[in-house]
Length: 225
Image 1 (cartoon, rainbow, N blue to C red):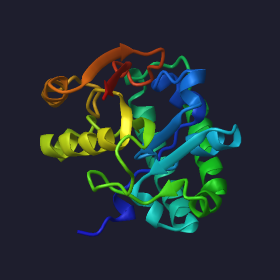
Image 2 (cartoon, rainbow, N blue to C red; image 1 turned 90 degrees about the vertical axis):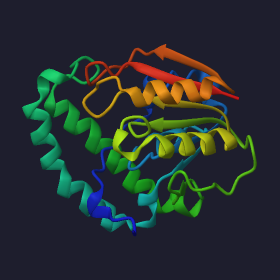
Image 3 (cartoon, one colour; image 1 turned 30 degrees about the vertical axis):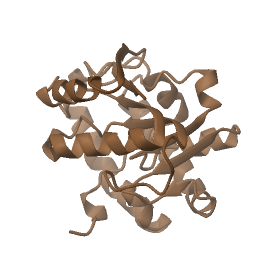
């Protein structure tokens, strides 16, 4: 089945959030970084402007700037309404309130849209859908990131997550996945099963981060070759 834009809820995060979520140090930022499922985040744009090496992968990058902009504005009010109805499930520290949340997300996505065509021309935004094989040699990237995708969408199943993370680990020397809970911020058996699988062949670490927005989503999974 063809990938449909109307099934996507674009919601972009910025460089500061990425650095907190993924514990990206100054030294980490100097490495080659691949972002998987980055969507309309401004991470790539901001990092590139600061001279860092980031390539983002996402199936939504097959769509035009206008199509992505339209979809972002279509879902904004729906997402914000859902957030207003579930405020008790979030930690209002890094983001102060609903207005701050909307401003932060929309600012990140506007930066992405401004950078999108230039980034595609520079091959920083590449259309790719996990677990498809990437056109890179083993160990091409130093660090691979997955924000709010892998391990969250349990309905995709164990095989999908194992295959996707295995391909990430093929092209990346290490991967970092945040958070390690499902969409309701609950720990799942899927996470335990995935960790058991990779511990057989890789160095696996679970690290508590300084970033927590949805209550309980403050753990980072790091897997190293």
